[in-house]
Length: 120
Image (tube, rainbow, N blue to C red; front, top):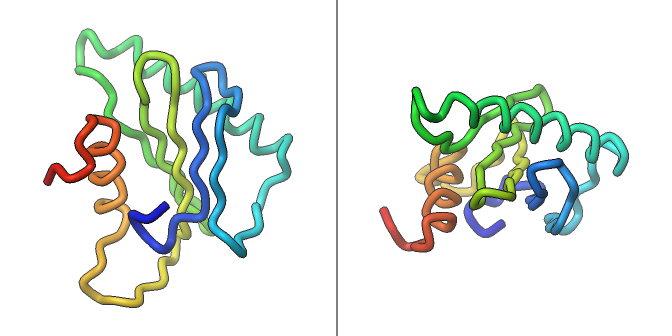
């Protein structure tokens, strides 16, 4: 959540799309109901499993991005059995023009998942 002020929420789910942990930014209201979120995560998990089948030929997936008018969702594998979903505003608000955006969030999450959040 501290990677970027535009992150709306983070969700950890298993590879079946079952939610294990959720973190929301204060003051943010979900666009989707709990049921819609659950169904969306299950579809994303199914898509991730399909991508994983191609890994012997193209390598392990690092992340996937789905961009919508109101938000952007990034999906990261976390070990063999979990996925991390990061949702952020599609029209980011910048307080500092030197701030990054999606690319910085992707790099930060990949570093956390690698075990070294300080890695460049």
